[in-house]
Image 1 (cartoon, rainbow, N blue to C red):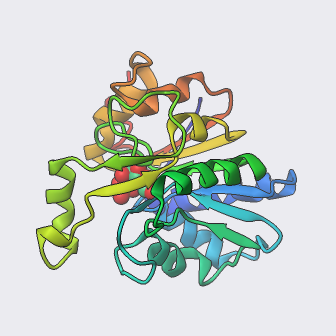
Image 2 (image 1 turned 45 degrees about the horizontal axis):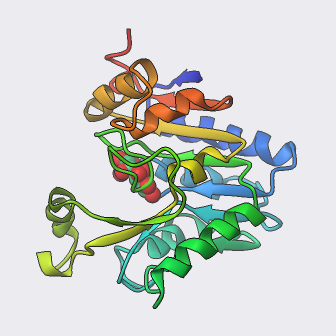
Amino acid sequence: MEIKLVQSQTEGGQIGLQIFKEALLKGANSFGLATGSTPISIYEAISASNLDFSKTVSINLDEYVGISADHPESYHYFMREHLFGKKPFAHSFVPNGQAADLKSETESYDKIINDHPIDLQLLGLGQNGHIGFNEPGTSFTSKTHIVNLTENTIRANSRFFESEDQVPKQAISMGIASILQAKEILIAAYGQNKAQAVRDFIQGPVTEAVPASVLQKHPNVIVILDPAAASLLK
Ligand code: F6R
């Protein structure tokens, strides 16, 4: 793993932009994308750049089950707001959380990943070491699958919804094996609340208890950290 220490998320955005640019120059045509607060500065930098993604595809990691693509909390909506509205791709795949047959949606998503092998996968890191919606305990051999959100996550997410019963109870997520298929992986983490997860995934044992620790086994991983997120590294 190559660690790049930055002083701010804005600087992380510029480093991320360079990594996307180098991938494009090397002929990348499939990009794996994430939502959440971490990638926003990278998406801002890409949006403000002259990079052209119009001949490439993007494949998002995850989506809630049961909310429409127009719901402001959906990941479809997030991606349109933060990236696709400003920087279009030839096609952008995001899991369909409203599919009538969720099992077949997971299978078609794996087919999409196989048909468009991801050249560069962008990831954020959960405080418990999750990547995508793959919580601790998820098998390293998992492909795209349906996740039952924990009570904790549902409660934490309820602040974004009118009431707790409107919070999605499930999500659809690329699996860990799906993520590892990417040729190159860029993971970023900022802030003190990520410090323990950063230490565990980079310097701890490779274990399903810390999903991101599997990245130690991938040959081509870049990690962007700010000083707070890196503060527990030895
Ligand atoms: C988002 C995703 C999640 C986030 C993680 C970190 O598509 O899959 O794994 O990357 O929860 O979230 P932030 O960046 O909001 O701290």
